[in-house]
Amino acid sequence: MLQRAASYWETNRTVGSFDVIVVGGGMVGLWTAYHLRKQSPTLHIGIVEQFPSGQAGASTRNAGFACFGSPTELLDDMRHESREDCITRLKWRYSGLQAWRSQFSDSDLGWQAGKGYEIFSPSQSQEWEAVLQNLDSLNELVSAAEIPGTVYQQAAPPISSLLGCISIEHEAGLHAGMAHHALKSAVQSAGVEFLHGIEIPNQSQWRRDGASWQLPTQQGRLYAHHVVLATNAWTGALLNRTDVIPGRGQVLLTQPIPNLPYRGTYHADEGYLYFRNLGDRLLLGGGRNAFRQDEETLSGESTAHVQDYLEAYLRTVLLPGQAVEISERWAGTMAFAPNGSKMPLLESQNGLTVVARMGGMGVALSPEAGKKAAALVIAAR
Image (tube, rainbow, N blue to C red; front, side, top):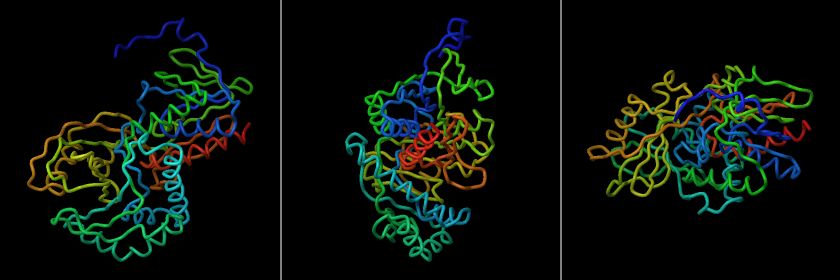
């Protein structure tokens, strides 16, 4: 795209004046606006998004998982956080998945109901034994989060060369682009205004005039009584905060594979690797833990070394000995806490509400995070 300096006429004008501006048009920002409109129908709400219409930072560039936590991920979470925090977050994730289906049809979301799985390669005997030993306690954990049934059960591996497999109830795949579009359409129909292609600068350039914020942009000034930052990985850069760390998630997608043995959503390596079928094609993503420093970036480009890592896993563990062709590659940017916690960041003061740091679970967390952010805005009015 042609880059050029903004003119005086472009920057010195008002492009929007709102009761509430939601910065970020991904799933969290959209659900925030949805709940704001539901709770206060008279509010004049605007959503400002830096990317073109139909794109978002991670919401439209993820792997399309509707999930709430694999066994090894939850065991790792318990090493970093309290049981109470894990239960609370599981409740939010599961409730969030139910919210998607209560508001939209499966066809609107491209929802593919079924089971999820976690697989273990022959080199993961220690991890496999740990899950088997803790299977009852993991089921007790999700039960405490009001997730019904026996969620985690031992299952036959999809291919014989794998060491083991655990099935996961209530998981699904969805079409992230369709889900984002369905939610955006609902928010637009409710009267929320959208401004695309507008980048909000660092907070040091904002001005607080009485009860209103003035936000300068290359397209002109924006005014709002209340600003919601639903910018996830970009929040740290906007607010000069070190407690929001970006984490790039890279993905590849194969050409159709005859007799593909994988059907459903799959996890491995504490959730750092994930894959699913799209018809007879296999989508594989992750590997961030093997290149952590490199992947703590806002860049949305895929890189050769991570893609090579994913391909090696695909060819040696998932489909050993099979010829596989890659058709597409992309990357999305998630956000994490530096201390290993996966609790979302939710806070509000002085006309600014921050909702961020979804920990790679934005699909599941966004309905509840948006509801809680909207409640903070309403309480501040």
